[in-house]
Image 1 (spheres, rainbow, N blue to C red):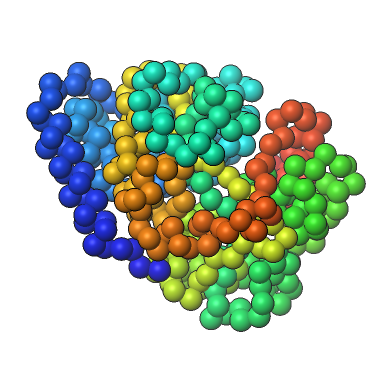
Image 2: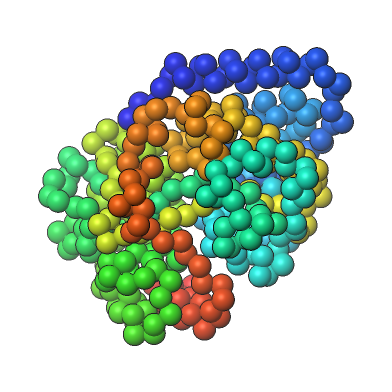
Amino acid sequence: MKRNTGLTLKLLGVLAGVLILSGCRPAPQPVGQLVIFNWEDYLAPETIPAFERRYRAEGVVETFPDERTLLEELQQGERNYDLIVAGNALVEKMIRLGLLQPIDLANISNYPNLDPGFQSLHYDPGNRYSIPYMWGTTGIALNRDKITREADSWSILWNPEYRGRLAMLSDPDEVIGAALKYLGYNINTINHAQLEEARAALVEQKPLLVGYLDPQQIKDGMIAGEIWAAQLYSGDAMMVAEEKPEVVYLIPREGTDLWVDNFAVPAGAVNRRGAELFINFCLEPEISAANANYLRYANTNRAARPLTDPEILADPGLYPPPEVIELLEITSLETFPEIREIRAGIWEELVGE
């Protein structure tokens, strides 16, 4: 899928206009340095420079390969981050661990731009600690040049014909969740026997894999033709397809995870004002649409819809139809310490950590 270049240029023009008009208002107090900890390439290229110019800020973006690294960095506390991007399950965990500080919604004037369906979700009632950014699913990225058979099932990632050409994400919740759905169970099951079946299925699968990889490694491997099928986030798969059109994204017929990535402010943040300004900036329709159009991700921002690339809105891999939505689940395990421990043991067996 090609990016809609015309729409992107139009959005950049709108961004420039916003910046020019901002010169008619009194200049805001300088924000200073804002340190953002994010996935690699998870903002449109113009977003940080536009924020810097408007608020006389210095945006510093550091990246993590997976959410385990993000969590470890916050727990160690050796580096101060002002703003992070984290998935719903990790936000829920970090709230429990006291690693986040509350967000003052009085400073988020663009909060009403969020689709009501993404406001006050179960993992953060009242959006006290997080503001949704993008959402999507975790499914199968498939190279149709290499695998031509029907493959809209998690079972393709257990097929021994493709030994050494398969990959799973380096995320325990995603991997264990996929195994549970493959077996026909709920992602959030608390049934010990079902979790044991998932463990056995993953042990059986492991010799077939290139490895448990971060999204960038999977993208690079698929573009190079070294990986033929992989578990991957919807937006990342779409980005691969732009460069390698024979790659398609499939939501498995057994169902999968619906995730929400969020902005959040770490407990140790030193520039909370800058973090809240950046969150509010990213909720502006023009900025939000520019991010979504660049990333090829589904957006939580309802007000950005009119500026969103129509190809994105029409793509069932990004905006699934109602019958597919019914098959999706949001991971939520923080109220079950015993289950967290069992799942941690499964992951330790798989990766030796």
